[in-house]
Structures are given as structure tokens and as C-alpha cells.
Image (cartoon, rainbow, N blue to C red; front, top):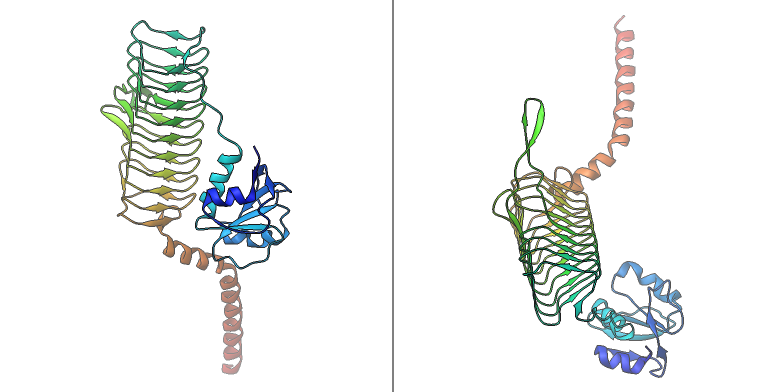
Amino acid sequence: MSITLADLAQKLGGVLEGDGRIALRGVAALKDAVAGEVAFLANPRYAAQVADTRASAVIVPRDWSGTCPAALIRADNPDKAFMMAAVMMKPPVPPPPPGVHPTAVLAADVQLGQGVSIGPHCVLEAGVRIGDRTAVMAGGYLGHGTRVGRDCRVYPHVSMREGTIVGDRCIVHGGVVIGSDGFGYYPEQGAWQKIPQVGIVEIGDDVELGANVAIDRARFGKTAIGNGVKIDNLVQIAHNVRVGDHTAMAAQVGISGSTTVGRHVQLGGQVGVTGHITIGDESIVLAQSGVSKNTPPRSVLFGTPAIPADKARRSHAHIMRLPALKERVADLQRRIEAIERTLEEDGK
């Protein structure tokens, strides 16, 4: 799809500086863009790339004052404006057409809402219920009694084990496993004995699960994911974990069993959280941190074990000075030894 720069600026609610007749056909990053594409600047660390970009236009903050060889669109929120531009020039792939593919296998009592799409080789067990306009794509498995709400997109090769509940408007990416058994065993006579995992997983509305996320069913009761939660790829959530509304987790986060993560929490990539603790509402845990104890609301944590981020940064700065400190101590030791030798010689 092609759009003129003037039309794009108008649709974005931005201020145009440059030739509005320029035709745009796509979006790209500042360093990769070529003629006919629009780029954007939201993070100041990339400001130097604006002067060298080959894009036909760049979306920048309203108060930006740098040099740019391309036309500009000044916007209140360049990140959001760029997202809107991308959608305009490359509309999303339409959902699969309603209907059940001939290769799908559905139990006799499955209930499908209006406009539901069931893709090739899907298996829907007894008692499954799916809301209006939801699409379950190729290779999906929905176990006994699973319920999926309205307007959901379930991408290929997703597995939802028995009793799983998914709310409305959820996006579940390929390879996600919901409701696998929690990791529960006890030792007996030198061997591990399995603890039955008889609970379920319940997921709220407007949740997005990235590729290969795994959410374990509860030992009893439920593992609960709140409304509006966003989870990146390769995240593991153990049994009986509870995640509050609008929390976000980056890739490779791991949360141990029976932990509660509050509302509006942000967990950076590769964060690990031990079991049976609570992370307070609106807390931020920076990447590769390990949280091992309860944290109050609005904490900002870093390190392993995770401590307040400002304290962690100071500690790290001290550690980086250790080699120089070691040399200084060695030098002082040599001076002391020299003084002691002189005193011994003077005393003879």
C-alpha cells in the first residue's frame, strides 16, 4: 500500500515538515530505511542515526532539534505514530475464514460460537466451548472442558490441557502450552513420587502469550493470569502462581510455584523468581535479576539476589574498583615493609 507523506501526517495527527507529495510504501529502522520508507526516532540513543538515514521521512518528537536529510513528521508519541504508520501501510493478515476444517477432530458436545474458525488437524475434546469469532489455527489441542472466550487468536501448535479457561480478546502464539502438570514430587525410598496436579489455569481478558510460553496447572485451585497481562517468548510460570492485571514479562522469565506477582509489575529478560513470595504492585525487576524474598510495592530491583537497584549499582561500581584497590593495598604493603626494614636497621 502507498500513501503520500501529507496524508500520513494528517492521519497521525502530526506536523509535516517537507514535501507532502512524497509517496511512502513501507516502514523501516533508521539505519535500514531507503527511499519510499518512513523511519522514527523515539529513543535518544539513536539520534545520531537521523542525520545519516536514507528514509524519505522520519517521525520525531515535536521538540526535536537535530539535523535530518529527510522530511519530518513531528508527533507527540513517535513510537505510537510509527506503529500506526506500519499498520496503515501493511495491514495485518486477516483472520482465517469461519468454519471447521475437514481434518479437525471435534467431540460431539463441543460448543462453537458464531464466526469461529477451527484449522487443520485441530483436536477439541469433550466439553470444549469457544466464543464468537475466535480462531484456533492448525494443530491446536484443547483438552476436556477447556473454555476460550470471544475474539481470540490461537496460533498453530498451541496446547491447552483439560480445564483451561481463557478470557476474551487473547492472543496465544505458536508453541504455547497451558495447563501442563506442575513440577511437584516428593522423595520416598530414594525415588521421586509424583504429586497429583489437579488444579487448572485461568487466564483473563486481553492477555498475550508469546511463543513457547509454558504455564503449569495448579496442584489444587488455580494458576491465575490477570487481565491485560503481556508475556514474551519462552517464559515459564509454575503451578499456583498468580499474576496481577497488566503485568508484563520479557523473554525467559521463570517464576517458581505459589508466588504472587502484583499488578502493573515489569519483569525484565531472564528474571528468576523463587517460590512462595510476593512481588508488590508496580514493581520493576531489571534483567537477569533473581528475586528471593517478598518485595514491597513500587520496588525497583536489580542483581542476584535482587536488591534495590540504586544500591546494586553502587555495589557493582565498588566491585569494578577492586583491581585498582588491590594494587593500592599491595603498594601500601610494600611501603610498610620498607619502613619496617628501615626502623630495624636504625635500631641496630
